[in-house]
Length: 316
Image (tube, rainbow, N blue to C red; front, side, top):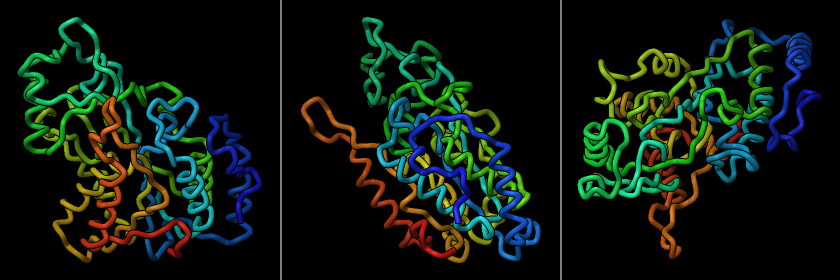
């Protein structure tokens, strides 16, 4: 049974949430269904929502809108409402950026002083040849691109300005936020919001650590958040985008678990609650990076490695 305020047709809208109404309905639901608080759960079920923010999820104003995220968010909301009694903890990562960061156009210029357009791929070789110049920390930027290619096996991608702290695009999708508020109230357990991506000189797709760790003095692995996630008996994962922040976070969970099949079997990937960024093409329609294919390959790989790839309608 869904709450009276829930309207999935508004999933594409940004609106002011009537928090008091959400809380009132949640309290009534808890009372009528005699639902125990999370601290009474014998099986801890966690739901990890990665970057379900307006800049990724709003088709009209999202600066880095992921096609398909609208349906993903409906599925996420339905999953929460249908399983509210079973979900013990909800975690949300928040992609959090500033104007001047290495993956934004403002960091770079060509020989005429022009910034690179969004979705430009900048290689280490490009920098050596002077195709692009870093306005800030040129030596560090050169070393970053070299390290990214040698260790991360990818080139620096320039993204549209997105998820700027304090902007509307930084906020969680309104429908999803309502569902999270509802679950917190029913289960009497606060959701955990985790900031990531605010380091100027590195990308930070994974919530657990940045792309190039040596860019952060003293190391950067988020051990505290990692322990919170894996403390659950089951951990469901959803969010945006499938090929970037979801992929890198799951890969890091996989690495930290060291291939332990018993531990990996506790991870559940909600395949109908995430979508990839569209493929990057050149001006002639040639595909430079096929993100949707990479996402499908990742799902297959996770399943083969012992994780569970499921749908939001499957029974917990």
